[in-house]
Image (tube, rainbow, N blue to C red):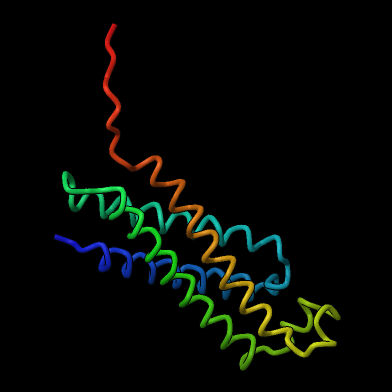
Length: 151
């Protein structure tokens, strides 16, 4: 029997690896500065969280509860977000520091916090989308206790 944490860790790592691969693929074609391509990140996150919760539900079948599914979705998204944020921090601070300057322009030059702000935004964006996506998918995957009304 799979535990909620092991399933979440597996799918969280899948999310992070897919997000990193997508970023590097976009970088390969020098499109990484186009912020509209980041919308695909949400699709990657949604897919990973949905299949993480669904796989956990199938592995425990009858003992699946809303709390277990919610916990699985949150941990999945948090793991994926933290790993991707760590990669982006390394990328922006060490591999391509000019990327941040190009992306932000003059927005944060007065404060000297441009890269830190971007890392923080990536983290908060990922955590917020994790909560919203988990709540959404649990409405689809939870057990229904509605009484069937046959007329």
